[in-house]
Image (cartoon, rainbow, N blue to C red; front, top):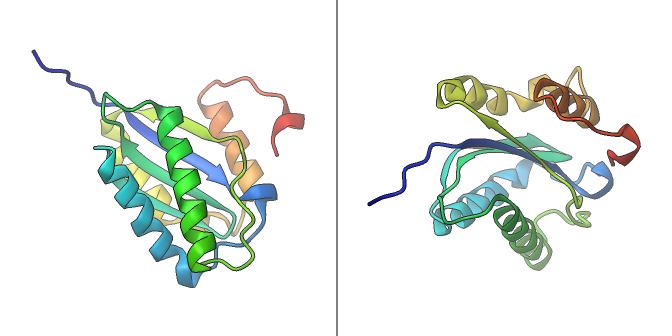
Length: 148
């Protein structure tokens, strides 16, 4: 018997203190690295993108992988890559928290477009505003004082 799943996650997390350290010129290298982490964990990456202070990852998790361990692996290994290769010289780390939101596979194309257009999207809305919007959209209760 096999295990079948289709859980589409949009994972969102920021740089430490929402510092604008992810220079556009080097983001592609970071995204390729994270894609490799996901591939090694047997997860399917649909889209990755972001702006200078945060990332969005749209992925399907393999049934053997827990969300928290995947995010921990992505953050730890990408931090090491960034620091060793000096990809983003002013990068001081990732924020501790993250958001992970599930969607129907029917929303995949809309989410891919949303992630691809992050630069345009953030001309009118900062990370915190976007994150609060996502929390509200998904009915997640939160205390704003804990949103770093």
